[in-house]
Image 1 (cartoon, rainbow, N blue to C red):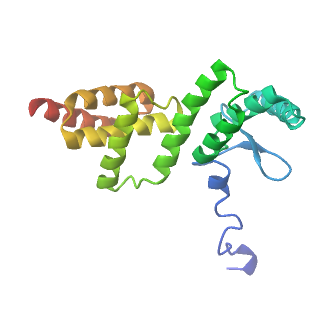
Image 2 (image 1 turned 135 degrees about the horizontal axis):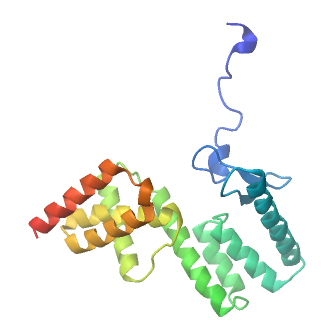
Image 3 (image 1 turned 180 degrees about the vertical axis):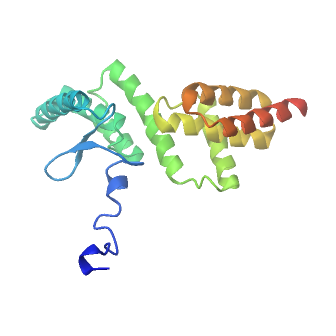
Length: 213
């Protein structure tokens, strides 16, 4: 093989996808001049769809510009957008909340609390080895406590994984009722995307839990 045909021994930026919030290919996002993520692109990969995301980027940049000039209302909006896009981590979001508490409206506070739950669940999921049964059960116990307190993530992978891991705990605790509730949510959220074999296994587990109740 000619020297020019050899593949490089390593990628120049091996962690770039993860650093920019990607979980798989293709991952598309609008970046600023310093490489920071402005907005990830969601939707069809078409000229029209990209155009819509570009408009959102322009609006977001305008919002950031006003926030940079001391507009408190704009600062709150930027903060919430960054939370929604998961551009800030859980600990950072809690800290910023304290700084902006007096500026957030009642509706913004409600939105913040919902988004914070998603960030908290995301931070907990990062620490869980999905192949570690004991870790899954322990995390499932914590998630169930959050669920009972009314702190449930809405939207995204966090919501689905929240309920999937609750399934692990409920199976361990022989809790058929909550298992059935969690499985129902997962099936509804996944819809046609659900793995048929996985669902069959979970349905079989539910049946067994009910029989041994």
